[in-house]
Structures are given as C-alpha cells and as structure tokens.
Length: 288
Image (cartoon, rainbow, N blue to C red; front, side, top):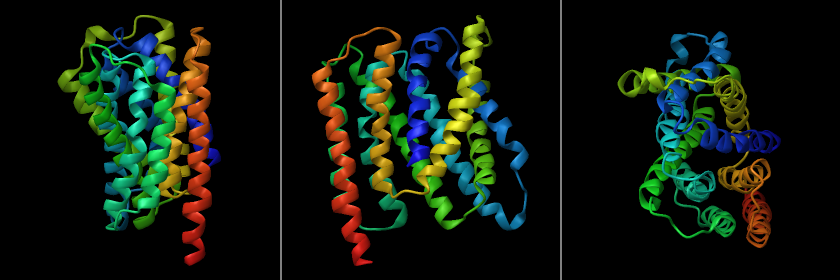
C-alpha cells in the first residue's frame, strides 16, 4: 500500500502538467517516446539475458507494451478533446476493468465481492467528478476508456507475470520498459511530427520529470506495490488518483472545487476500501 499511495501523489501532478503545458503544444508521439525512453534508460542496466528466462521477459515486456506503450497512445490524445478534470473523471471505470481482467487471466469465476467493492469505488469517484457532458464528450470518452482498458490490462498482466514467472523487481521492470519503448518507437516513426518538438525549457523540464519521475520511478513503485496487494485493493487505489489529481489541479490553478461532491465522493472511496478489507478479504482469508 505505501508504494501505491506515494505513486498516486506523484502521478496526480502528471494530469495537470500534460493537460496544461504539453497537450496541443508538443507532439504527443514525441512526448510518449521521450517519456518512455528516459524511463527505459534508468532500468536497462538491470537487464539479464538468459534463455531460461525468455518466457518471463516476454511476459513483462507485453505488460509494459500495454500499460505504458499502447495506453499512452490513447491517453495523450485524450487531452486534445477533454479537460484535465474530464480525463480524471473518465478514469472511474478502471476498477471494473482490473477486477474483470484479473479473474479472466486466472481462469477463475467472477468474484462478486471484488466487483462490488470496485463498483462502490466507481460510485465515489463518480460523485466527485459528475458534470454535464460537453460537445466532445463521446469521442473523448471512447479514447480515454481505451486507454483505461490497456492500463488495466498491463497492471494485471504484470501482476500475473510476477505470480507465474517471478523475476527480481529491477529486472522485471527493465523488460517492462523495453516492451513499452518498442510501442513508443513505432508510434513516433509512423505518426511523429519533427516540427512538434518542445520549444521552451519548461516543456523540456516537464518531459524529463515525467520520464524519470512519473514513469521511471512511478511505474516501478506502482507495479511493485501491485504485486503485494490483492486485485480488489489495486482496483480501488486506481480511483484514489481521481480526488488527489483534482485537488492538485484546483490548488495549482486556483479553481474552486465543489466541496460537497469532493468530500462525499472521498468518503465513499474510503468506505469502499474499508468494506473490501473488512468484509471481503478477511472472511475469505479465514476460510483458507
């Protein structure tokens, strides 16, 4: 949990930085390539090439290609159609994707209790973020939901890879970023615009921070933490980014939040975590 909480705070700044300073100003494909490339450079020294670990390497690379590579392709585009609060709002379905994908990959029957706690978290995030849809609502919704799906698929894929083909965290992260870099490189070569490079020191600085901090350190801590908790807690923590991200956006740009919705939704999120820990995990643990 501590790793997930710290990463939540780190990532919460990313929404505003991308939405305000990069979207519409810097070529999104270059932003993705630089962000993933810098993160990969941090972990490349930890790669160990062994034939016996080939299946493990492919599993973690596939997780990275989904969670960081393909997800970013849609995520960065969403800021061209949606505001920062809307991008956060449309992330409320993440717990559903995580719970369902995890059960499918395990070949298990759907656990209704896990789905209930995930739905409760969705309700809490929805209360915080409810607003009337704008003219670009449906297209923006489609883009961000696709990003959410691949983000969830990558998270669950990494967690399952650790369960089936465990590697040391630094080594598994190295393969994870290599998979993401393959996707980012192909996207830049096919779609990138060399005229859309950063033009200010601030833009370059933000990209460096996003690459080394939010992506490099952030995804390492998030995936490490994800391997230490159950899928239900992981699903709920995904939605914890919503109120934190909104509060940071409000504080930096001096926007006044709707306190009634924010506090009510936050309380429901905390309730969903308590219900999951107390009524769903504990009884099953006792039965085992």
